[in-house]
Figure 1 (cartoon, helix red, strand yellow):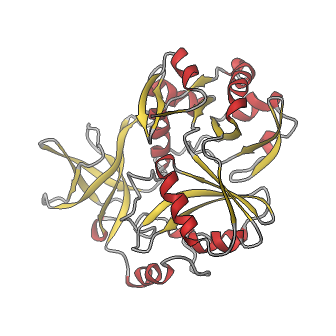
Figure 2: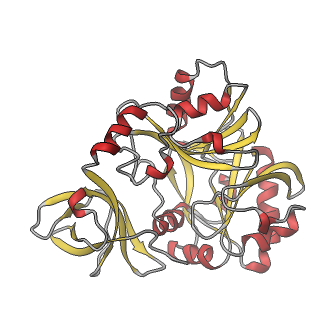
Length: 360
């Protein structure tokens, strides 16, 4: 198991550490519900240094990104980020990622920890354009400072106006006494905040300054369990659960990042799928009776026929009810469709709802 540069800090804080994506990661400190509430109402800090960072440079960097990703990266300007995915040749997804345009001909791709090697090999395999590629995943740490009070709590650490950094934009600026830090409004919780990219050797000092600066705002460290409940309340996909090598972006509701105005890997087949229509769809559902849906549970219709599977599920701390995502047949995918979740020997009633679950 790899460790992040902050693993010893989490141990000292009494975090429960678990193996995750090849790393030893803090899953919780005080408990999921209290950590979840801290982010929804105040400010909390996640160590997400397990994420991967690839840097692409050169005159054909954009052309390579356009070829391997489904969204239209030509819309980016320096200081802007974009959510996208890399389709594979079989109609599924290699990974979802965030593309940051740092300068003309210079980009950073942030990929999922479990897919670093797979993604690197995939992009390298398609790099016939002479683009310079650097995998700096092992050198960089990433702190996600999330919550409605994040901008106010962190303002003393930087000269840039944090409240002016809009969602999916970033600044390369001073932060916590360091120059040239990427401060990005690309969090995955739905409660605002920032992601801070720093070198491994600097991250502990930054972590300490972040907690000093946020003390008056009740800042707390937050584990991956609360990160999961927070992203699920927003309906954000998690690779390995809701999307993978077998799910198409169109089935996963990611048509909005699948732009047929350009050519990309497997675009023709995905375009055909769009024209012909999908047969299954990722839907959001809420249980209408008590129960907690979990990944892998069967979804059945009113007659008890299996129509799909839960991909992510939890007891929502904000709504105090069971919520989840899962693929179902197209006929059962409309909002307000009544479905049932097979929880052990019981079929618990649920209904398909519109995202996000949490309206804030």
